[in-house]
Image 1 (spheres, one colour):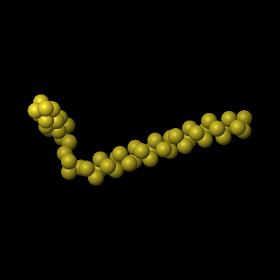
Image 2 (cartoon, rainbow, N blue to C red):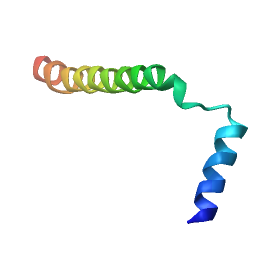
Image 3 (cartoon, one colour):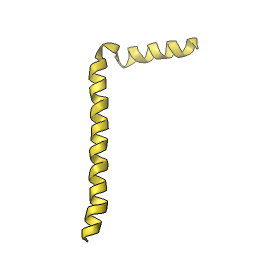
Image 4 (spheres, rainbow, N blue to C red):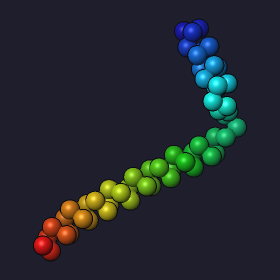
Length: 54
């Protein structure tokens, strides 16, 4: 498992990802979840309500 740790460190250095941005990452994650719920709600509305009217 030593290679996995070295790979993780290399990836963190390559993409300048740091754990200090955790709150930003959590906010992006929550925003992504909310966006997906909104898309599912819109598609559900379009499929069922518009189909029922037409």
